[in-house]
Amino acid sequence: MTAALPISTSPQPARLTARDFWVLADAGAFTDFVKAELIEGELRVVNAVHARHARVHAMLVGELYHALKGSPLILLSTPSIELDSGSVPEPDIALARQAEGKVVIGADVVLAIEISDTTLADDLGRKLRLYAAHGIPEYWVVDVERQITHQMWSPGVEGYAERREVPLGARVEAMTVPGLVVELSRT
Image 1 (tube, rainbow, N blue to C red):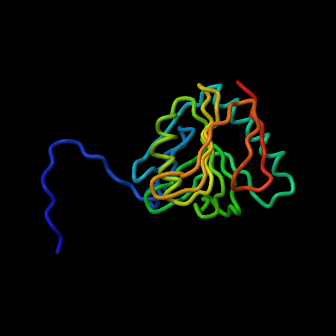
Image 2 (cartoon, rainbow, N blue to C red):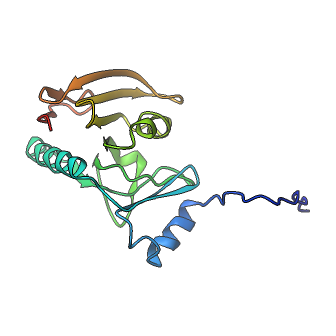
């Protein structure tokens, strides 16, 4: 038996599932956007990337590419990571043990990186809690405005137990990926 829902006269957000997200993506619904992601059932799209963000992204991808030589890890730029039936975030960069098909499974991700030019509150709030709750071992947020990298590890239900801030221009040594060290120059 289904329960009657109360009548609502104000707009209500529609919650999507990962399956809904993939149907829309396959139908081309996101082709006009740089990034489309599903966060806890909420569809979020971005249609512009600022030059500072793009510059930091390119530098960090280059640093990681060189640092990972000989490593079995896969370097991914803006991958779709399916964490659960309601969340498919797209971090700016991720390192994964494997990446087959169009989606990366959250359990395969060892490091997620967001580059924050305009989204710092969300990256250090909702996304931080989401990645931690799903066991992503390490999470970095590169704060372009303050010129620091927020490095977090030891995930738990509410967030990361360990964290530090590393100024841009200094070396960042991954805490959960042995031997991974990068230096991101100031922008």
